Length: 116
Ligand SMILES: [Mg+2]
Image (cartoon, rainbow, N blue to C red; front, side, top):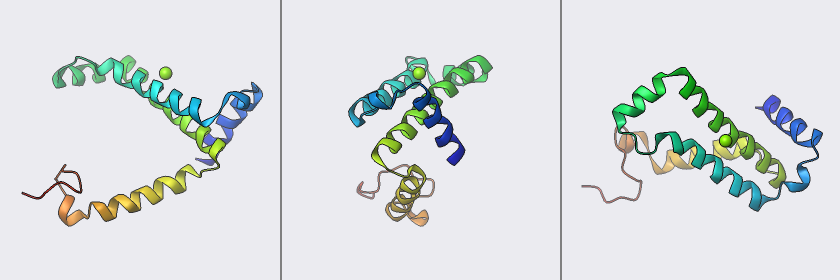
């Protein structure tokens, strides 16, 4: 992760783009890239998604959109002084408390959903 962060920041700084990277515009950009990730799945039935993703060209396109999101997340974390790996680990710990394995295994219900 450290190498990726370094590469993302070097790319940004070589172009003097830090001046444009405020939290609002980065958050907007993350949402826009997430929408680009959704677009190829729109209106496809589950079986069509499987066929779509079996094609290397389509998988590459999906990977590129995922990469756009990751690059922007890294950029936003830098601007906000947030260690993304630490934040993700803390969120995993929080999720582990909300979704203990014995209750959540094989169960997609939200943690606060009433049990049936
Ligand atoms: Mg994109």
